[in-house]
Amino acid sequence: MENEKITVSVIKADVGGLCGHTLAPEELLEACEAVLEEAVDEILIDYYVTRCGDDIDLIMTHKLGCDNEKVHGLAWKAFEEATKIAKELKLYGAGQDLLADSFSGNVRGLGPGCAEMEFIERKSEPIVIFCCDKTDPTAFNYPLFKMFADPFNTAGLVFDPSMISGFKFEVHDIIGHKKVFLETPEEMYMLLALIGDYERYAIKRIFRRKDNEIAAVVSTEKLNYIAGEYVGKDDPVAIVRAQSGFPAVGEVLEPFANPHFVPGWMRGSHWGPLMPVGEDDAIPTRFDGPPRIMALGFQLSNGMLIGPNDLFEDKGFDKAREKAFEMADIIRRMGPFQPHRLPSGMMEYTTVPKVLKALEDRFIPLEESEKLKEGSQKRENRDDVE
Ligand code: 13P
Ligand code: MG
Ligand code: MG
Image 1 (cartoon, rainbow, N blue to C red):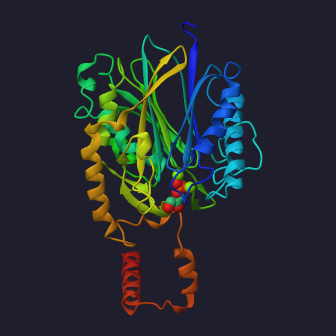
Image 2 (image 1 turned 180 degrees about the vertical axis):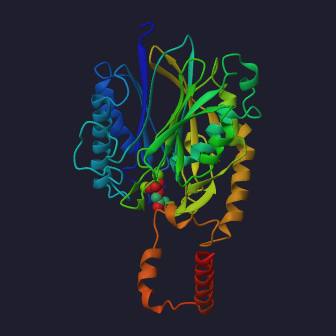
Image 3 (image 1 turned 90 degrees about the horizontal axis):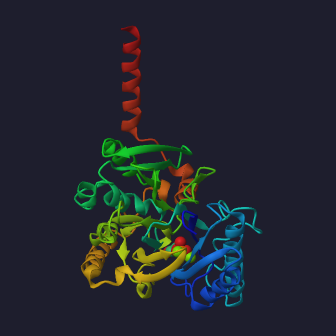
């Protein structure tokens, strides 16, 4: 067992809600559990099934590596079984995230989201699994930056000798379909220049620079523009390794003590505060939110998932929840106006193109703008002469 690599795979999907988009009921979780239980020893070492709002999260350990067909196929089968029940019960959006009719090799591109990492288990291996609802993977840009690059959040960056050389961030350009690696602390400002833009850049993975050990990974499967349309809203999951050479569990959780605004919430089309909650409170109802995040702490023991410790259940996060409610009240007042409403390119649902089409013949040029156009034409002509 020693020195053998363990893979942690978290694969998630929304296959139906009770009622509306609020909750994946127990029946669906049981259907998934039954499928995973069958696979213990043959494919999996261990598993834990949970839900955040209407999203089911399958937390699995095994030795088959990332992107393994058997593991992904198993998750697909679990979601298919849960979908059958969701359809029988006529749950809302039954089968919502199973975009393909059948499984082909890997869940990527088929609808579910997936975060996986492979590593040699340390003498003690604490990991934190984050599960969200009503937001998208860029929700992790801000807290992951704080965890792995901000010494005011993570004291270990200054005081732990194996962290002092910093971390390497793999950032995906969603629109350009490319990625770049940036190293902190030296390239911190360039990193921020990118990841502060939720429309275009998302952190996918983080590595410790000292030895290139994987430290964190986020599900970013649907974060793409397909045929010019933003389809990125996919309630994400993330895996973060903690302690000895990585941020302490408390440092991993600290960014959530002051809620930040994330895209998502009602119809995937609004900014809202990301509220940290325990498993029992991950039921977003107010305006279908506010967006939620759960943090489940496990110790790995030869691949067995010991736990979870429901970390945001702690009273230490009560104030963060209160703040999130205040932020929610303030931004809700804006109704359909920005900055509550997302920029057009990030809205999951929008009638704007249809409204523009309907009004096509009713738009008339502004006189002033015609004059301005003339003026700039004259200026151009003058420049040509010069
Ligand atoms: P989900 O992405 O959680 O299914 O929510 C969609 C929605 O429209 C919420 O208002
Ligand atoms: Mg849903
Ligand atoms: Mg959801």
